[in-house]
Image 1 (tube, rainbow over the protein chains, first blue to last red):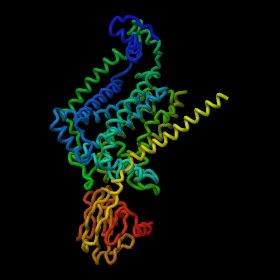
Image 2: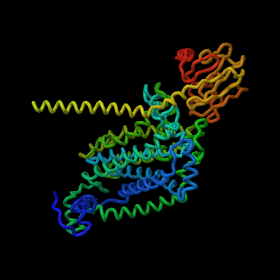
Image 3: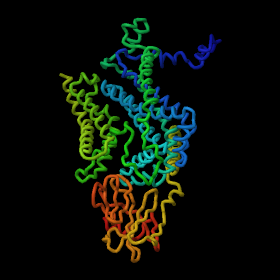
Image 4: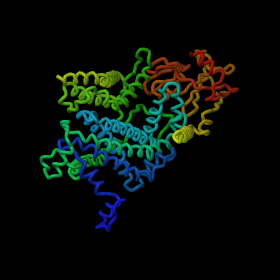
Length: 416
Length: 166
């Protein structure tokens, strides 16, 4: 047991019992971050702030929301929006933060791909990150159902119906998930449970693992330079701060992050106060009606790319039904990023994309293709649109098939 | 000797925990199943005796619209799809367009179900004749009980129809 003596103050009293000083050193003042990074490295902290916004606004909304098909719509659109003081603000912040979270997740994800931060010891960071992406997707989908408008209802109907594509047991699985033959009260209450308890808990745990998995391989840098963190940290602690290639997480790295967070939150509140409508689909201000389908059903913008992969295959190929091909492509699209570290057959080369002869083309084609999928995912799937969607979906899948060959080829070039 | 006894205790503990875990998962799975009240609402009896010739009436079953059309004498029959009760011939379909799930409406003049969303047309037997729908309107499971139809139950006539389709 530690030797307990008369304390010199509150910090010392706590330090004797909880080792707070050592804890702060390990987590903050001696957690070393490379200097050679840019604003894209601040996205993780931006995401933490956004998750905080979602949590706090969510708690406030939870006090007035009623998970019952007869009460849900009015509890959101009347009670929260019109009666509760600042209820409108919490709702718009919650909706916009959900959208913004996905925007930042995509930037975070493409930063990781561009700078090769998913491989050479950093695989677990990547995989836990993709688990978070899936958990956030489930969180967004379950949350979208809660206002119980027409879009909530039909999105729930269509997405739960996707599980009918599972061979043999599909139809039973759909009924099991819904707790009814159609999306109904049982569906609303169980997705409410998922949205406010289970999924946030999972997300918090996975975030902790995500941070932990970063600790040993360390944060990557702009040139993927291999740093000896012990040597560089020693330089910093010895006062040779200019010469050292690292800075402590707190106060140096976070102070810059706070600047990026500040700039981002300005943009965020601009959206919340003046352009909140982009996260508020007008069709969803009509109460859910199982007897009337909206003319066009589409998801929020952040799901459009995989929605377009799903419906891009609109004709049967080689005797396989269009719907089945779409479903298979959709499942692949949702998990293919997870295995990216293993599709890259040049695992030792972590150079950023612009220094890799083939990978840079692969990267930018992927970005452009996903933007095309997103844009066409919102348009009605008729005429030329259907074909653009089809080819964009083919290119998306093709890129991941090509990746092992491209990187293998690059690896050969590296040796020479 | 002591080691094997420890192994036995370990395996016994592990085994009982595994059984308990599986049972718990089973209980959790069942908690998610549709409730008895929901399941019983999955069977609806509809009285079709009062439907006039050429009239289409809609009902609700498992949250879906159901159309029952009594064919007039001059409407073509379709042995693979017609529900015959005595002299009366009915078309019984789930009223969701097989394209994207919109609800079509029956046009008595054209003797067709017409979907406003993307222009799909189905004839009086529910067979797709125009537009994007990939297949005829679905027939819900039914049983004939006198002059009523029990929806949700697979009766003799339903099995005959599905057998003919295959």
